[in-house]
Amino acid sequence: MEHRFEQATGQLIVRMPREVDHHSSGQLKQETEALMGRYPVRGLVFDFRDTVFMDSSGIGVILGRCRNLRFAGGRTRAIHLNRQIQKIFQISGLHKVIDVEL
Amino acid sequence: MVRKEMKMEFTSQSENEGFARVAVGAFIAGLNPTVDELADVKTAVSEAVTNAIIHGYDQKEGKIFITCQVAENQVEICVIDTGCGIADIEKAKEPLYTTRPELERSGMGFTFMEAFMDEVWVASRVGEGTRVTMRKRIGKA
Image: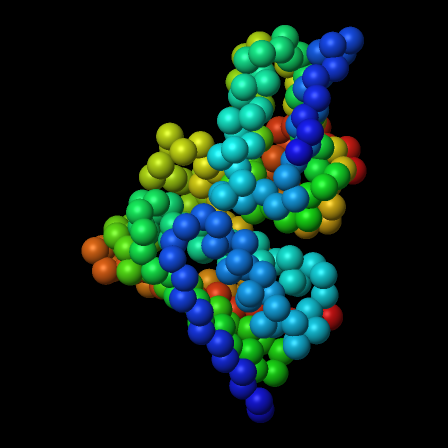
């Protein structure tokens, strides 16, 4: 997984793992928090291009980071969602909380 | 009517979440599920197994049992743990409800199982364990 921070736009792009479940979400959360502490993040982008599976564990990770960033006035987006992940977003209502681009 | 059955048993480490959903997915492949149906079943299994690991066993070691039956175009999956059990099942099923807010989880586990499967039953006894039974018809269209 290669996350990256774009200085010019203040965007942190988080490359989501292949499978986002309880097992992978702990590390994902730690990595994202560490980067948010290190850089002046103004926007957070969860990039699902490599992700083939996500369960409700992913929602906690995304919502938690989204809330933290919102206190600082930043926006969160999710990009490159496959159908299964779109469905997860819809059922959980996450698509109403953060911006989604397919 | 041909009835196929499988049983599996594994320890409650989070590494096994992926193994469990993939194994169930492979077992039901004979029903020729669509990509979406397969994803639905895998998600529901992942939710039930994760609940057993986090809540049933409180992340300590225990055994998780899965039985899976297919008959005609229906699959029935039971995910069983012998952990702490659920005191209030109706409460546990409420969307966004969680007994472990510090883990920053969504409280959507049962909601997802119910959304992705046709029927979900939960039987539980405090101190003895929990059994989640889920059914789904494959190839409804």
